[in-house]
Image (cartoon, rainbow, N blue to C red; front, side):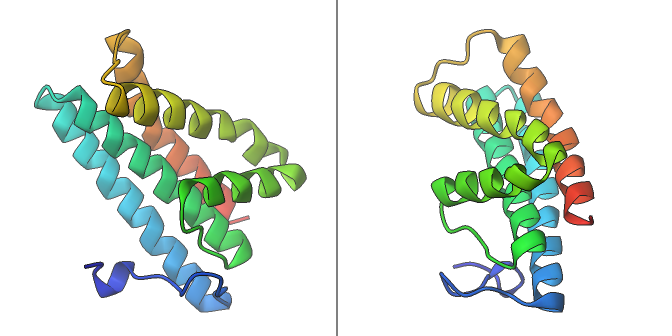
Length: 144
């Protein structure tokens, strides 16, 4: 069950003003917590779980950005991808930062977690660490 602080709008229902800002802040807080959990799993030697948690942090930060800018919360990753692409059409900074989203989706989520192919360990670890930069960038873009 999702805690009340993490529950969002019903699918297809946009949030307005203060509600969108509150929900966006909750998503960013969750992204930072997921990144901290990813680092803890990395320290414990579980790179697959760390990779998946870093992907989750990337998605939550992306969702926070989308909610802040549109009031709509993506339900699934394809919705997040579409939302970022739409925002990126009008914002070059978002378009540039989307490369981390795509690499995290493919490398951390797809290759490392699902296919257990985490070769180039140093690169995977770097991507996990860089997730925090992506979260901060998404928060900055959300405030614009």
